[in-house]
Image (cartoon, rainbow, N blue to C red; front, side, top):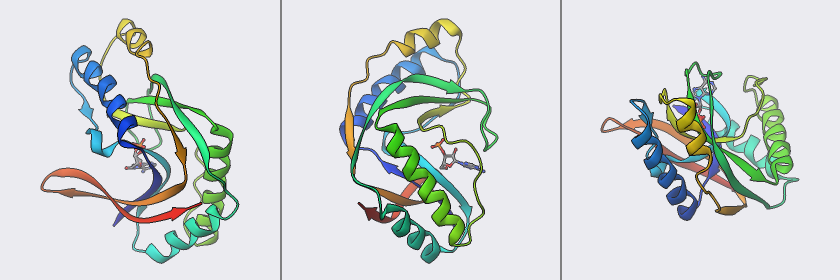
Length: 180
Ligand code: 3AM
């Protein structure tokens, strides 16, 4: 199965992101958009693996020294090209306790490596993906960057997701939640 570990987002935050996503759809031509229920923040992509026990054990180890911390929504932005080969990712940045988020990602990366997963050496750029290969010009990007985003959350754990297609729809199913 195709697995990744990330943060689930509260409903009010996903609603706010959906407001921005609607404007993005109106102002752009084409692209694949993430539905509201799929908004999340990826910490680590595991790829195809059946090692659920290893992933859960790494999550447990990684969360040991972590305390709840706050994150908020930043603003609209995009990556031109990503590690997974997507050509453009439209996204929202995060604010708040991003230092603690970075520590969490590092301890998770180490714990996964200790449990036999390949070490991910890519730079961590925390973001919430709104869409892929969405085309728009600079003027639209400026307008989208001005879209007000104010919701925030307390992060109290991480989630192991399975990414699969159910009836043709990309679905992220939580398989395990590790609290801290
Ligand atoms: O949070 P986002 O949407 O950026 O891009 C994929 C998504 O992250 C990423 O894993 C998340 C859940 O699918 N992803 C997919 N394939 C990947 C790969 N080969 C990948 N990340 C790194 N390498």
